[in-house]
Image 1 (tube, rainbow, N blue to C red):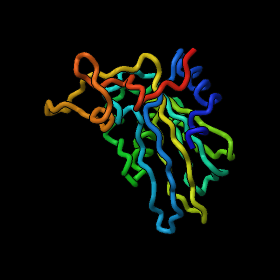
Image 2: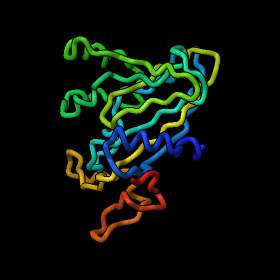
Image 3: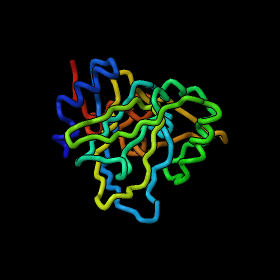
Image 4: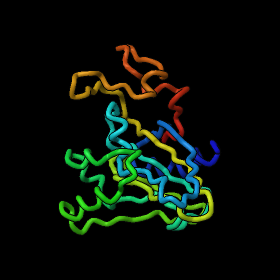
Length: 204
C-alpha cells in the first residue's frame, strides 16, 4: 500500500498542485466503506484543515485513491467545487462534523447562502485519483451497493508547513494526535519535519 500511496507520479503531482519544492507525508488512512441497507455510513461535510488547525499551510492537500471502480451507489468522495476559496467563512464550520450523518442540512444552507454551488462525486475508475486542497469541503454518502468501497487517503504537507499554537474558545491549547507522538523542535513545539513520522516523499 505504501508503494501506491507514495508513488512518484502521485507525490510529484501533489508538489505541482501545491506549488512547492518539497512534499512530506502528514497522514494516511485506508477506508473500507461497507454496504448498508439502512442508509447509514455517511461521512459528514468537513474540510481536512478544520482538523489540522495547528498547521500553518493552506496548500496541504489530499490524494483520494479508490482501489476499485467507484460508482455513485458506492458513496464516493464528493466535493463542493471551489469551496477551498470559502475558507474564511466561519458560518460554514458549524456544519462540519466527520460523524454527522445528516448531509442534507448543510446542502439546504448552501441553497440559500451559496446559490449555484456544484457538488461533484468522484466516480472514478480503478487507477484514477482525485486531489483536493485541505480547505475543500467534502463528504461521502452511504454505500448502497452490494460491494465494499475501499479507498486510500494520503494527506500531504508542503515545504512551508510548520506548527503554530492554536487555542479553543475556552483558552485551552489545541493538541492534535500527531503533536503527541512527533519529535519536538528547539522551542519545544511539535516538529512537522520529523523524518520518522513525516518523511520527505518528494524534493526538487
